Image (tube, rainbow, N blue to C red; front, top):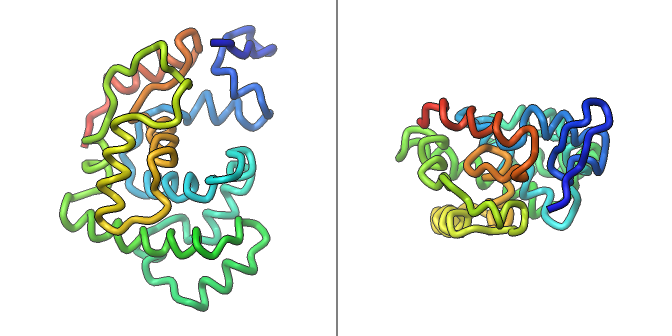
Length: 201
């Protein structure tokens, strides 16, 4: 697997993070580190659904706009959005104005509340699908996994929308449910250590 060498420090990183300047801090400080905060987990799953058919760079550059438009992805607030809110969002040039995806976020906020009522938290549920030891030969070579397929199927059964296995796998990669950093990436070991000390909810 080819690896990007960051000119500033000469350290190897996942090849994709050399694609745009904003990718480097996201890669080094966020991508793959374990997350237990329900708001962050919900936000990421929503942003991944918006990314479908688009580039992550587009979504990352609009992330603060999305946060403003969706009340910080506080699902308790988003669950109460109505048609007036949908129209507001469809007029917001700072986000992706796709009615189906906007409606999916509102729907999924309601489903998130239901899931928390049953399971205690989103984190406690999502982390049941953690992938412990991915095949190093498959790192960043796949777009789904058996775990993402299982979580996708479970969420769809509960009424979640825009949560296909590819979307869910990207979510798992970013939120630390799988360490998909390249084998020689300088951040891989940092993520591995963070996952080892992470107290799963």
